Image (cartoon, rainbow, N blue to C red; front, side):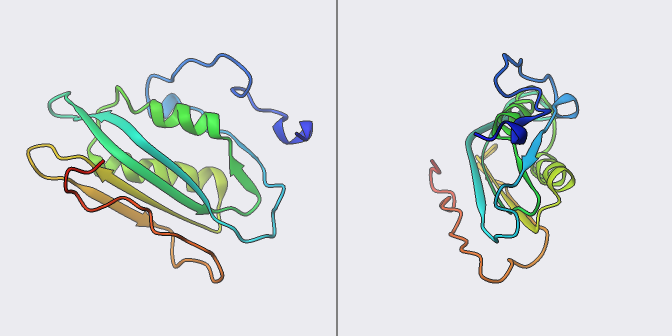
Length: 154
């Protein structure tokens, strides 16, 4: 591993506690060693949790993030800690999903990003939330997110 690429990272290689909320979570980035090459990166978090802001009950989702990087890559440990910071955070499904995407767009300035938030049912109704920054860039291989419509999803 090129030591210069990890210079300045504060969480990788260290015992880092789970942030208490998304606002205090520190997302980190590293230079993209393949900048100038158009490719897609996918992160899948099939066990995402947050809290209902009204009842305090847990909500569960399968989150899929696809992005086409430019100069920066998200450091995966910081992403894992950021996603984990929602565990005790009360927010609606739509807010959680879009907050994740917007933080990543602000941090990375990717060529393109999309998120799929596939939320498990509460009260018998699953809520799926989708957002992307624009059209898929030409020439990008982009597989389906692979999460089936709800039918005992999982």
